[in-house]
Structure formats: C-alpha cells, structure tokens
Image (cartoon, rainbow, N blue to C red):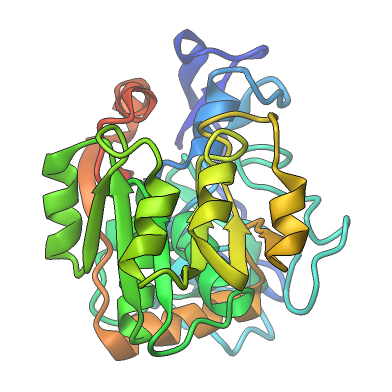
Length: 335
C-alpha cells in the first residue's frame, strides 16, 4: 500500500510517497481501519519541516479517520463498517497525563496515518460522531480535543462566561464552537477583518483586530465592563501572553496551547500572581476526553470548519498553505 513518509532530517522536499507492506490481520484486541482522511496540525508541520526530529522514513500525520475493515478477537466496542477517528496520544486513556501516556505520538515517535490501512489496538480509536464526514472527523483528533480539554476539562467553562479566542486556526475555531455550545460569550481576535467576519458568522459576539488594537487585552477587558474575560485560549505563546493576562479577570484561566508568537519571552509574573491567574499547559487530551467531546459534538450538531482539502500525494502543498497561515479552520487530506 501507499504511505507518505519523511526522509531524515526532514524538510518539505524530503516527503516521499512510498510503497509499504499491507496492514497485518488484526490480533486479539486490535482492529484494521481503512483510512480515508487526515488533517494537518502545527505539530505535523514541525515534524515534516525538520524542526521536530523523527526517525528516517517515518509515516507522517497524527490524525486519522476511516472505516473499520476487520475486527480482532475480543473487540466488542467496534464492528466492521463503523466509522472511527484516531487518538493523538493513544496510550493516554484516562486521568492525568504521565510520561508513559504521552510517549507515543503517531507521525512522530511512532508511524502515523498517512497510509491506506492500519492495524492497531482498538483503544487507539473512538467512534466518529454521527453525521460527520471522514475529513470532518479527522479534525477532531488533535485540534478539536485540544480546544475541548483547554476550555471544558481544564477551564470548566459554563453559561455566562466570557471566552477569548485568538485567530482562526483549527483550535481557536473549535474553542469558539464549544464556547457557544456551552452558553458562553466569545471575544475573537484576528489581524484580518475578513476572518473576523467569518468568526462572527460562527457565533463570535465581539471582534478585535489586533493590528488596529495593539493593546487588545485592555480592549477585551473593556468589552466585559472592566471585569475581564474568564478564559483565554492562548495560541500565540510568549508573544501574546502579556495581553492575555491583561484581558483576564481576577482568578481567570489561560489554556496555554500554542507557540506561534514565540517559544520564550518576558512574562509579567507580578500580574500573574496578583491577579490569581491560573495557567494550564494543554497537550491534546485523553481517550475519555475524546469520548466526552464526541458526545458533545453529536448532541450540539457541531460541524468542523474545513478550509481546504488536498489529496495525500499533495501533502507538501497542503503544508505550504499551513505555513503561510492564511487558512481558516482546518486543512485536510484525502487518503
């Protein structure tokens, strides 16, 4: 079968469509999945570009969605024909993360889903929420679950809360959708008025163009009558964290997710502790989190937002679109 692999040390010119052995028949506790779609995450770009090192000839992509083709002995959660999506951390089943539960990452420390079939333990997958295409399901594995854990699991969002989301990438769009489903008010930031209009179409209540409002943290606070927002989905990292702290109410929560605006920098620690700020590092989520998210997606009729779709053999073009940061929502791949 065909698979998209990466020649070490990486780089978009090192992507190779390879022929690999067919997937093995499932053993006890395993299933075979015919993969139909994946979606791109910043993590995939970091691996493919060579910034995050991986083994030579690694099969890429952390997200996978498809149809169960065969079921091994003792598997009763899935049946042939079920639609399923993969786990970003397949060893993290429940509870708090541990070094062991975070040790396996498809498309990074183990082979990923840029291939036609895969045979793996059944617990590496969950059922797809009804009504979603394979591409839509694939967007949930990393971006959807990251937003869910940051806002719902760690943040405990509730009706009436104010949530600030940064930009229009996959995690931010999912956070907006989950926040609105929870009855929260959403403040959305972007440098593009066009993207802000699209975010408003998804339910954003207040819009801030951060190029026009460099002190957007203070602007967000003013929108809450000076109280401050309850949650910030922090995508930028060190470069945006000071403004996020300014936007936050006393005792509010920052879900620290991304590093798009820098890996390190000056952090106003005095503001952090004097404002009783709670900052949680978010690394996707557990299988239980994913099962809970899937039920919420189904119950609220949430439809993932797909920016564009590329065939697997055009992965380099898809990654270049991601690199340009012009996308709105998720970039997907058809397998």
